[in-house]
Image 1: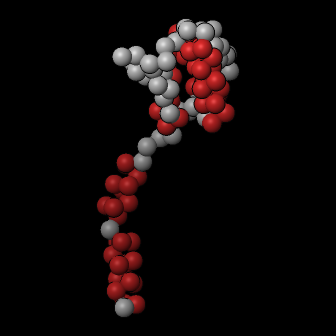
Image 2 (image 1 turned 45 degrees about the vertical axis):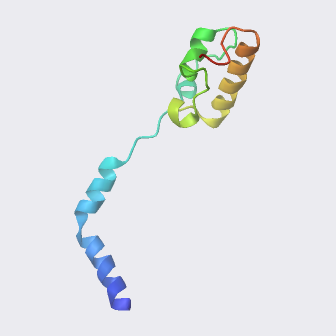
Image 3 (image 1 turned 180 degrees about the horizontal axis):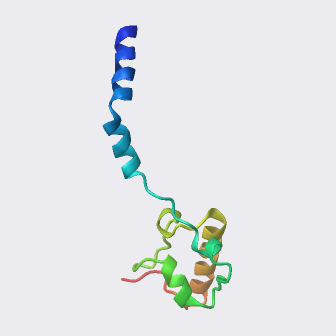
Length: 94
């Protein structure tokens, strides 16, 4: 039994094709657009700016799509909800 485990490990180490494929498929992590540019200030009174973070149905996009950090994703959610409340952004689009 121990010989089979060692063979698997040795075969995996010898096969560098697996490692090359894995490295090629690795996806780069997105950079938060609000952290990258300090001049951008989220404002609930600016619906054009908030449309980047909302899909065509009116749903708020998740962090993995927008690339925003946790802090700024919370700020985006708050700003979009405030903007919806004063009827500058729709809650949903049919």
